[in-house]
Length: 221
Image (cartoon, rainbow, N blue to C red; front, side, top):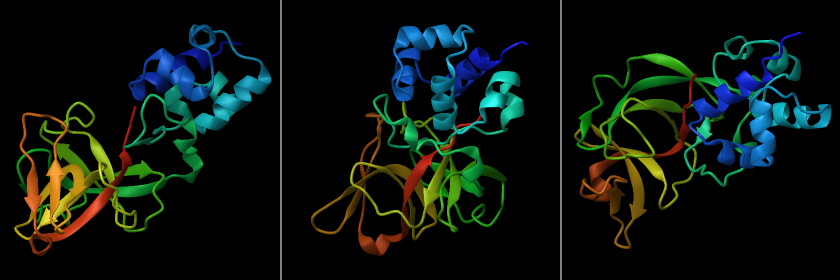
């Protein structure tokens, strides 16, 4: 019987935009061992079980079905995940919920959000448990290289803000920004871009309608 394991493993890795070395580390494997699996070798049962559990897919389907038949969406990549992260941050597909994409946020200049904030554009799948969570589409290039134009980011209204982490902020003029959160000692909030070509933006508390933390970046196949 033909095994789809290697192709499925490669497709997941490429969807997450990770190197073989980084993905192998996340799965707790040596790179040379992972390379063999991606080339078609099926691991022994204990290792296979461990890999499938970490990826949140059924072992039988991982081996015997093309990836698109396993699930339409694979794991959300947390916004704070790096190459040294832990694959336990990937939630099994069965635990995902549907999150509305309500509009776009400017990774650069402010963008008028009011016209789109009540218009459902699409639904995406997320592991965020916040019942009021929503997703935005990044517009612009000021958050490169981590966040690209057109990518979806899930925003949680319940998570605590963390200095140095991405947030979405809406000002009283209706503009929404997606940038890195830096609180100032005087109570003001500075938003920084990861692209050095863009200047910092600073807001007084009375200028802000809401500010929420980014839960994670949506990765689709």
